[in-house]
Length: 496
Image 1 (cartoon, rainbow, N blue to C red):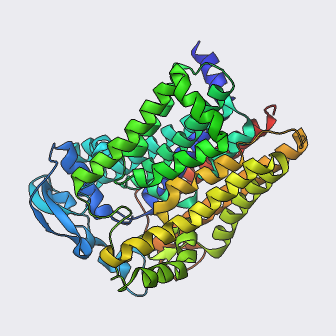
Image 2 (cartoon, rainbow, N blue to C red):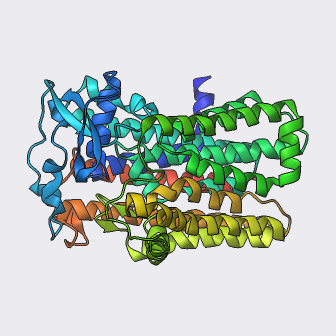
């Protein structure tokens, strides 16, 4: 029995996709020095405090002048930016300059600017950090974060494959950008938010398709919609800001008249409507209660006097919002290599090209509309809020919306391409997207082992290495390469 199950798992592309996402996240977990991910100083304190059932504290000013709450956490998690500051110097040296990581379980007061965030993510990753205070607990929280992202991502992949086709599963593969992997390998709710958003796109598109085809929706599919809605709504603050355009695009893509009619008239449609609308309302309520003060992030640069000036300034920065969505690592200190960025764009271009060849003009138009939303919503939102909250938008904030672009593009059905053409599209799209993520991971390893301006072949004489050293990196690299080839091979062999 166990042997049969193991054989089925080995032949299942979903199993290998899970290993691919997990191993990428795990290697990112070790590639970045502790506190090396954006805002990780605040998220670590919030996670451990949540596990200790501390949900609020006195108000103070934290990192970069942001309003924060003070929590009592083990001394091991009190170092924050002072520990990391040396590698943020102008010449961006390697992580060898870091001193020993502080250990100790005695509790001290530490501020966190993530105090207003919903507790969902932190309740999942924080307990292991509280149980093992120190560097071991820190890495364990990162690994739990990677595991959660991989589980939710594999769930979306399986749904797309089970209820759709292999090309739909390819859309899920492309949705995992280099930023998604780097955030999954950190104590940061963005990784789980992105995976939850991917599952939300896939489960809602699948459910609407079944409703319009007068097919029953299984309990498992309803469960996927429920879980993804909850994750999307409660992992990050102000999720409704992204949920509303995502829902609108899904309905437009599925056919607005028939979709709305099915959601209103059919019993299962009403259940789905209640689940999703409750998620949006829950997100709004959490935002209102949190008092976080801005829908899309805090400001790090003062705004201009008028809305027109702010919109113009945001438009000038629009290309940065778009580029940095695919790779802006560390404390926004180094961007993805140009080749990796163009590979990310190439993967999306392949998906849109596939859509235009296979789908009708209306479906392709919605895909283009999604692309326009990805480009212009950040510009408009930042331009509007900058007058009162300042400029502070980062490309990663858009990923919950952007992941729908390749999913929509590859969701179409059609008979204009034969099996050979579809296989070629799938291999090219997966290979292009995966190569971009691997290049960014290698670049991050170079950044921290020998410094941003150090040797390209960093593995020959590294100045710093994560726990496990080169043997662990080599082992994870082998797992990454094997799982990538395995799920790609098994996927493209499936019938269309």
